[in-house]
Image 1: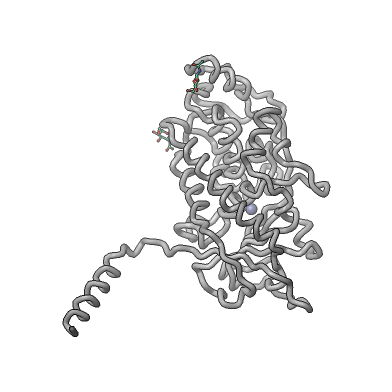
Image 2: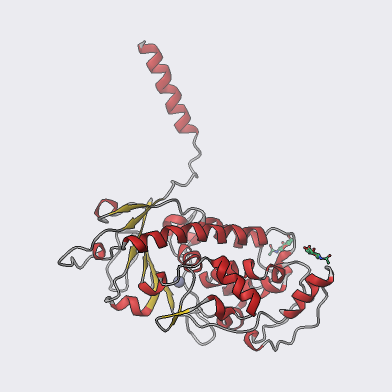
Length: 336
Ligand SMILES: *[C@@H]1O[C@H](CO)[C@@H](O)[C@H](O)[C@H]1NC(C)=O
Ligand SMILES: *[C@@H]1O[C@H](CO)[C@@H](O)[C@H](O)[C@H]1NC(C)=O
Ligand SMILES: [Zn+2]
């Protein structure tokens, strides 16, 4: 009997030892939900989501994973990195599609969340990530759709965070529709702004869009936070690049693949205009410098599309970038 026990124990230890050390620990996802503490505590415990907000976040996570998988599929064809769309969004064939694909795989690290009533048990736990809902009365709620904090990093107020958080403001949760619905409108109208309906006088992104962005800031979801952590890059005017024209035409080509908002827009366009990313939707090499995509006045040569006429016509329509523009408020990283 003892001997059997011993053998079993050895087997367990061996199995544990065989798990490769590079396997990242699964992240546990939580939503802070219930009723807010009264009186307020002045801590993140005040950022309690309502049941409706918690449901919105849950649906948003599912939708964001769908968006990630749509993006990953569009990134598969060999040579897609020479497509027009890849050029505008990520800087062209000097970037590997696999690099971009990996960033969408991080979105799939978002597991199914449970609900919690206090952040206290998760302090300094690198493998827990908590979604919170910033009350409408908080200053941050005006300024940003969302804000990501990481353990060990200084917050805006100069305090070092002891929690991993993704915080949504009311405007970040205002639009509850799927990115698929939003993308269908882009396809029909040719207008990127149609994906961001005005709610309370603000263009409101689908939650999947915001999540794909914030995941790029969230250390517990990354393979290696040291090298994988992204901040929001600044454009030629020294402004964080959140707008559609900004991320394509006003951002240094070398920064595009490092800017979370480029991934969010790519996810949307992968659904609305996959032809934009076909290797055949290709205008010659080298592509030249970026024009202004919003005005669709580039100086790019006419198409060299070798696909069938339907695909080539769709490609031709967006050969100089998808026209139209949208400016968006902040999607904060933890330096803001
Ligand atoms: C772009 O894609 C092609 C085909 O897959 C590949 O050979 C090339 O190395 C890629 N560019 C980069 C920078 O990875
Ligand atoms: C053109 O190619 C696309 C994509 O491969 C395909 O879905 C479509 O059916 C083709 N259309 C024609 C008219 O061959
Ligand atoms: Zn950001």
